[in-house]
Structures are given as C-alpha cells and as structure tokens.
Image (cartoon, rainbow, N blue to C red; front, side, top):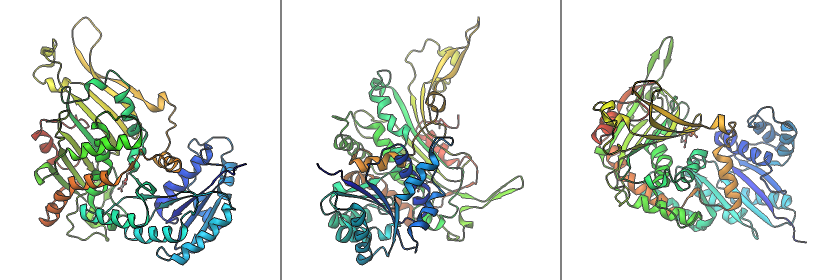
Length: 490
Ligand code: BG6
C-alpha cells in the first residue's frame, strides 16, 4: 500500500505580525474545515528563542473560529496546536536550516515529504532564506514550494534582480508570489460574474462601459509601520499590485480555459497593452494631523520613524488606459489611500447612456447621473449591486435611481473565508491561478517604474489632506479631466 504523503508547512518569520494575525489563523481554519491532509505538521521558524509550547501559546491567542459558537472549536484548536512545532534559527544560517530539516524528517517518518515554506519576513532576507531552504531544507523526494509576499522589489530593476536570485535556487513553478487581494471572495467572483452571466458578458467593453473605478481606502494611517511604509508609499503598497491585479482580471480577454497558465497569459496581455503612467496621470497626497471633537489624529510625518520632510504618498489617484480594441479610450481610475474617512475596497463599473433614452427629459440635462453602475464591494459588507433607473410607484412619472442588491451576509449568511485560507489551500494543491507569474510581475513594474522614478527624482510634493477626510481634491480634478465622477462620492 502506498503511504499517504506528509505535508509540512513552515512559517518562516513565525513571531511576526502577519504570521500571528493571518497565517496561523488561516491554517487553523483550513484544518477546521478538514482541508489539510491527514499527515500534516506546522513549523514556526524565526530568530526568537522559543520552545514548541511557547509557540502554541503565542498562536493560540489569534486562532479563531469564523463563527463564534461553532461546535468543537476548542477541541479542534487543541488538536491543531499539537501539530505545531518550533525551530529557532538565523535566517541566513544553512546550519540552522539543517537543524530544521532534521526535525522535519523526524515528523515525516519516512513518508513521502512535501514541504511548503511561507516567507513572512522582510524582503532584504528573502534571498538568504531561499538559498538556505534550497540547500538545506528542500524535500528530497516530494515537492518544495515557497510562498512569498510582496514587496517584490521597489521598481523594475530590483524586481528583476530578485527574480534572478530566486531562480538560482528555485524553479518558477516552486515560487508562489502571493497577492492577497486575489484571494478575496469578491475578486475571485469577478470572472464568474462576467463570464457566466449573459446580462454582463456582452457589455464588457468600450461599447457599453464608460469607465471603471478601483477604489481602496483605509480609515487608519500607517501607525506602527511608518518606517517600512516610507520606503514604499501607497503606489507600491496597493496600486502596483492589489489594484492592478484586479484591473488585469477585470479587463482580460476570455481565457482559453480556467487553467492557471491560460488566465495568467491573458492578464499579462492586458498589462502589456497599457502605457506606463506619467506624472500628469496621477495625483498624490499625504495625510496630516487633524483634531475632531476631543480626539486628535497624528499626521503621517508625526510618526517618529518617518522623516519630517518625507514626500512619500499615503494617497494616490491614477488614470490608466488599455490600448486594445476592447478598451480603447475607457479610463480605468484607481484611488488608494490611508487615513481616509472610511475603510472600503470596491470595483465600480459605470455604463454609458441608453442611446436616445425615451426618458431623458425626466433626467434633465445630467444624463450621466442616470447611467447604470455595477458595484462590487470587496470589503467590508461584501455585496454586488447594480444601480438602475426605476419608476417611483404612483400616478405621476417620476424616476428613481435605485439598487438591485445582492448582500452577501443576507444571502450567504456571512461565511466568507479569509483570503489567506484560499491562497494557502491553493498553494498546497499546486493551483497557481491566483499567484503572480514572473512575467506578470515584470509587466506590472514596467507600468509604474517611470512614474515612481519621476515622483522621487522631482520630490513631487503630495497634496496634504486631513486624517479622516475624503482625500485630496486633486483626485476630483483628475477624474473630471477624463469625464469621470468618482462613484463612491456621488
Ligand atoms: C497590504 C498593505 O498589502 O494590504 C497594507 O501592505 C494594507 O498597507 C493591507 O493595509 C490591506 O489589506 P486588507 O486585506 O486588510 O484590505
């Protein structure tokens, strides 16, 4: 009888925030849902000295059951924690990775070993760890896969360098570059909505769509992460990856199949059909301190880890165009910001007018206000709604703009897996659809690198906006230049 393979998941950087808040809880959720194979172990690896019990105590604090009152949750947690182990070591020490390898072998007990490494560590040590993994902790007979999280470089050159270094030690199909926005339920649903609904699929082009808006806002600043953030800024943190990935998925041609390579081929084509951004295509902002009632909020540069004269943007709006037959002339507007008035991520699709609209008199002169708009609210309160024109019931003829509304918490009882659960499961199963291929990454950097260079060389001063506001007014001018009104503000 052939033995079941074993799966070891090694979280490198186990004592860090991402590991505690996202990765261990996602692994537990997968275990809870019986999605992990029978023979699995989880290993934490980091520099902090800890024993297995201490790791268990540390991670038990952040493990949750998605629905509080679920049965057996405590019991399942205990079972999960018994499968968690720890090995401390330096990130660049091959000896320490050999030590880890010994412990892994012990648990694998001679069965076919598969190993998944999750690098939850700062980018300056990615290559050291990948080298140590490939020399000392790779699986000899099963597979070894490595999940890495952005930043994948700061620009085209550094990203290519990183890709080159990785490829010295790993093959492309061992590298899983994560963009956690691709694991979000509504982002995954984007293709389903488009390709499996006749009411949408034929409309997905310049013939019917006037503009597309990708909006990300957070109602908190960079508190505690200022030092990291100042080196990257919002364009690298959100736009070049999360929003651009959504754009590529949104705009791609129909892939030959749902196979990962077919989908990624189409996404790359979209990225390569776009022109690199120029200074006039963007507006940048930075939040400043603000008092509301008896509460006061610090500005970005008040953070002691951020230089006083920093011009790093915490907000950016950008207009992008896809130079192909489907999207010629359609503005794709992006907006991303920290310390704004609300936390929200959404995709907004504004449609054109109905030609020769019989009811145009009822709308007055502003026909644009009466066009359909499809909104995918990625978070929070996941929803899909379509703004339509409707007759207000009564004897007169008055039109109302109202919503056909699919609210996930009502329809699906709110049970939505965290993005990291889906992505970890996909990596375990070797499904690459939601991970970024190296040519995709390169195309994404090519779009933003010239702009980033220009912003930095010219030290372009960001427009200041108060903490908790709707962001710089410049974003409205940018939209207006392209005949667009931001849907989230109307
Ligand atoms: C990360 C960014 O990629 O995404 C953070 O580095 C940001 O700055 C985070 O806060 C937002 O993710 P989510 O899933 O909370 O919307």
